Length: 218
Picture 1 (cartoon, rainbow, N blue to C red):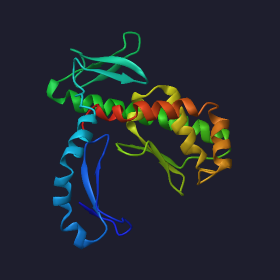
Picture 2 (cartoon, rainbow, N blue to C red):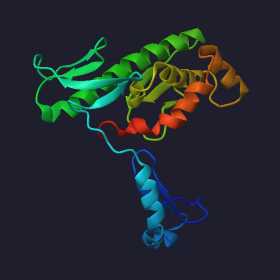
Picture 3 (spheres, one colour):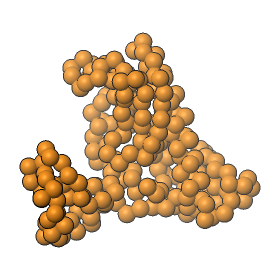
């Protein structure tokens, strides 16, 4: 339950990626009856929850996307706790105890995401005569990236699961904010100097972005 004075009435929300159910209230008085209000919306909440992607554990036997291609997670007998990407076989090999496999695979994906996103960010920034102060990766549920006024760019690590053209678009979008902290015409012209086609990745994210949150744990 959340208090938001700008809200005009009680509102129930179900996050499409995480399944979190929240009630937003405009006042403390309204907040006191938020739970009863939510109970009255139970059928609608159930329908929304049914659409939330079911989680897929990052363990041996699971199929997951990696840079847009389906990969199989398999056990690797050698190398304690080692996660390796076999590009030719389209597999991610993971060693060590199976109980620790999900965390190790997720750590591997985050490392790969950080490496690729930092590389692309600095490359794109140089193309527009700018510079990135720092690149961070997080597990954000509602934003694929953000750029702060101090030129630090943050991305959702799950972009490593998407095809490269989608990741490149998000990078171009955030790097363009180094010069234009808005979404005006000049901003979009700048984005197009980095990636010519912005409609295709935007459509891909609208159709498939939510599903990327089903892999691993929050």
